[in-house]
Amino acid sequence: MHRLLPLLAVLALPQFSRAEIAVKNGDKIAFLGDSITAGGWGNPAGYVRLVMAGLEANGIKAEAVPAGIGGHKSDQMLARLEKDVLSKKPQWMTLSCGVNDVWHGQRGVPLDDAMAKAGTYDDKVTTRGTYKKNITAIIDQAQAAGVKPVILTATVIQENPASKENGLLAPYNAFLRQLAKEKKIPLADLNAMFQERLKSENKPNEKVLTSDGVHMNVEGNKLMAIGVLQAFGLNTAELAKAKAAWPPLEAAGIEAAKKAAEARAKAAAEKAKQKQDAKQK
Image (cartoon, rainbow, N blue to C red):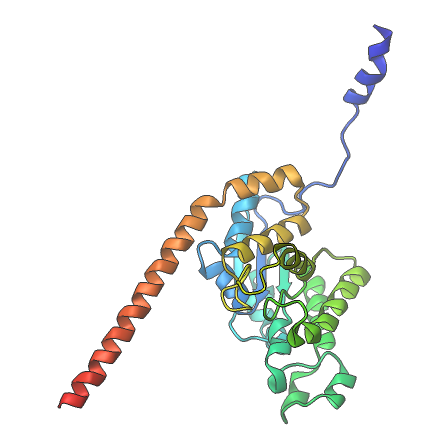
């Protein structure tokens, strides 16, 4: 009997193997971003929807505050931070920003002052500031308002890790990782997750995670959601519960995509008919 005592003693101890899930019942989570985030909410199987369903599957009923606008860069997100995020009084804010700052080229936002001077930008570049200053201001203002930020590294620009665009994006993501470390705030390193997945899949002629090299397909949305949920503290078992809740959303997403494709085809046919009718008159 005495041989069982050490084991019983261990089993009786509280389990402190990890921190609890950071998000609590009733919390609001603002999702600040660009078209990737807008699609993450607008698509029934978008990553924002998957995150919320994943939390609910683990007993956490939170409220999403969608704040993604297509084409937006860091300066535009900073300009609307108060209106779209802080005024909603969320407990949390995820920040997904960087793809457009790079992808927009001359109309983009330079990483810092040195890049602004060395790069080729349009004559309005000074009004856009720099990525480092804009992102730091977003984080500082959120924290000052009592909002807990979660930084998401920017995903990819084309699904070729060695592409020129991804090379340009790399220092932006390096800055985000360093900022999260300095500010001691959660980081969802989506770029690292995407790079690893693309490398393991090794399908250079196929779209694995995106529909067009930037915007998410089903698998891309799921990978983003996993990264965000991990940043919120979900462990392996909790992530499994989250994933088990996703199939109905995926089915709804497929149906929505089908209807959208049918609508586009119908609109194109009507436009072609109108042109044909015009020619015959």
